[in-house]
Length: 192
Image (tube, rainbow, N blue to C red):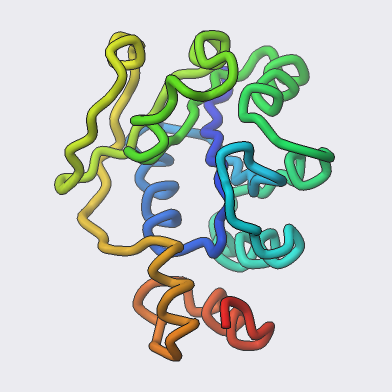
């Protein structure tokens, strides 16, 4: 049975911790593939995202060179608000002989109980939670009972919010994002 990790997010922008988590998940979970899924219009985001085309381009640059990383545009193509469950339903129906792993950061895991039809979602996937040594997350009691696997992520102090803040302040980001992504942000004048 094929083992595929689903790694969704706004990736606004994609950064080194995203790439590190996907690489560690590949190895620790013995995945055949990590499918990167840039969100279209995530229901829980209140700020306006950078264009889908720019976020897609940055993910493509970040994952280049790792053949087991693929990009799927399913949520960028879908109109309106995007929900993870809708995406997982499509994949599960199209590839029934695949075992699905939903790769989540600690912040997403802590709020999973607020996601649309989360019980159906966790029935379709195995949760793969980033285990960061510095993270102390309070998880909903119902979610805590859901079987999951942890992915040990090295300590990395990076977030998309910090990347955007640094760019807006004219500070360097070379240590936060892949080189090709930093060049793309500079060339496209993003986050200024």
